[in-house]
Length: 304
Length: 274
Picture 1 (spheres, rainbow over the protein chains, first blue to last red):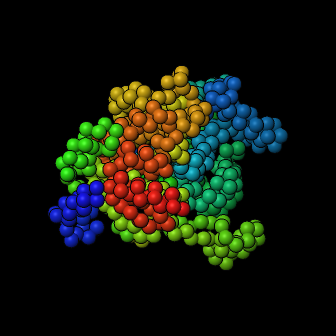
Picture 2 (spheres, chains in turn purple, green):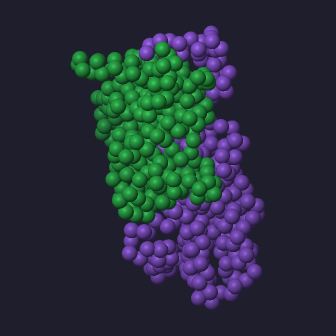
Picture 3 (cartoon, chains in turn purple, red):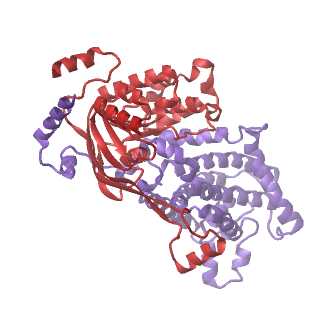
């Protein structure tokens, strides 16, 4: 039997004799295993996985409440209960609502829109560590995971927006052409959230402590985002630079824009300056920046 | 003599197919060293105050231990080969596969591959809360298939895995599966696409006899589609049935590399002596 092996070795030696392993690899077009593809190639791979992203997001939506008896009813109940809790505390107990017309739709819009971004941060942070099995079993561009989670959260938000629409109508506010503005607002916020989720995914994959820290950061962010009160009542008392800084908060911008498009009682004059430019800029900077930041460490996810 | 052997292995239905005639390398491992960094081992103080003082002084954790799992191995695998990796527990077999898949960076040396190698291990979980059915669809989509391709392959995958042999298990969540069933479905999904390099870590040993036969058959097909298959197994008979070449690793070094029959025999003699 050993003659077979020796003969095989001789065959191999023939055409490629004297080549170093690196030269041999170059001759047959082999590449270093696990090397990160170029940004253009990576984008092509992510685009090729668009069906996976959509199917994974929908599958997650389907199983989310599958172990509870009420099942999909929770899709609607969870946002309603959330709004009820904040209403109880901030309107009935603390009377924050003074000076804000139509406080219930105002509060619900803030809660739902902020939760969209909050979910992006939280699930983004865990998107690599929670899916190590999948990452190690199959090869696909890892950015598909945080993007799929963002799509999943957008689907949930659309359910919440349905609930919100009913709340707005019950409050006696009219349906206006401004409702159409919801679509660009949602698109811009989704792009921003996807980038944020990818940014947090890389950080969370490296630093497991982040998952413990995030709830505190998120809570601080929520109180700064004008979910419960009108931020312009606070910024008026602050120096100009501090007010500008608070008004540049992307969560605040998307919340204010959503209120403006849904609620007739929120005038355009109450919006921060250059609000649409800011909303678009955050989407571009957040979305693209997060994507590039995530791609830079692509070859390192799932290692260890 | 050589011709006779070729004839034998072609006529012999159970034996591995003959080694390929054309030598096109698909995996080149060049003096590869793998070092694991393990946190939390060794004699470090684990208390919160000591962790805090480490952060303040910007010192790395004293509990960091380095494990030199693979100590400089080199080999070249060719198109159409099935390479078995054998050796006792902790000899570096699974680590070598993970490094070829690009999941572990070599501390020294390099690994060159043709395309993206697919690594299939028993521990690789898919999405446990989802049904087997959805796992098949999602797994195929994640590998880059389109919906049309998934529809085409779906029934083959389910049949191959044998999940539905004992009732309609495919519509149950994967967490309800036995470990063998889960491993079978994962193997079936991964094997649905022809990979240039497919690496299998003990996956076959969890399946029952019928599934083992089917997967050995599938490995043979994958090799015919000009792929290279790596197989880590503690079952010498599986290695003999599927692999035409075997590498024996011990303590992170190659102890023998050659035709399966010779290497496995040497390994068996060595284990019997111990």
